[in-house]
Picture 1 (cartoon, rainbow, N blue to C red):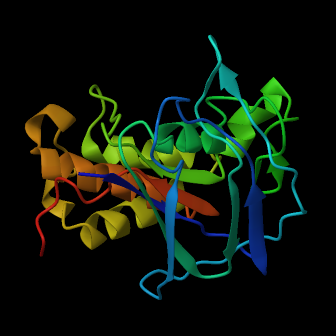
Picture 2 (cartoon, rainbow, N blue to C red):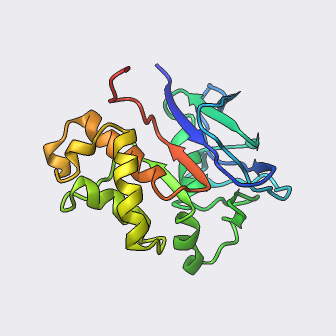
Picture 3 (cartoon, rainbow, N blue to C red):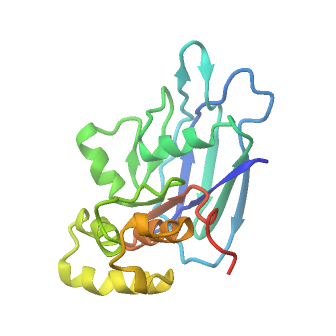
Length: 220
């Protein structure tokens, strides 16, 4: 069964254009990516414009290409699903966008940052413009639910007054108002995933990337 990555692009102007080449194992007989784009109005999304970007590439030794000849353009308001079999390069695609990996050639442009040319000192600032829902949640175990969500606002220099207003609001949206003082280990898998989703959205990021964000959440 092909696993799915849901990538939500939220920018503030006209459109976004991302073009890059990445990585799929050479022996794979599957296409690198099956990109299924759909425009939805569930979330108000806006994009800042991207300059035209050259297609990048990156290679693993020995002679393994994880992604190749990938070009992606997403218009304002689009809600995009990235689907593909195991080993197709979905995780590499995500890592390139988060700058956890650097492309060997071409351009990866996110929120106005060219990630193939970005300086190391600017990477944290770029990441502060993102909201990311990881498949393994990556909640901080020593922080309560409230503190985990507030942390995403503090690192973007949002004041405590705004944090006290915004965090309870986002907790109510995901149905976790009563869990604000709980620690991650005291929550179910579905509740932890909702905390991760709330943390990704609380600081109104320009771009939201979600790795199977509803996998542990009840249908309702």
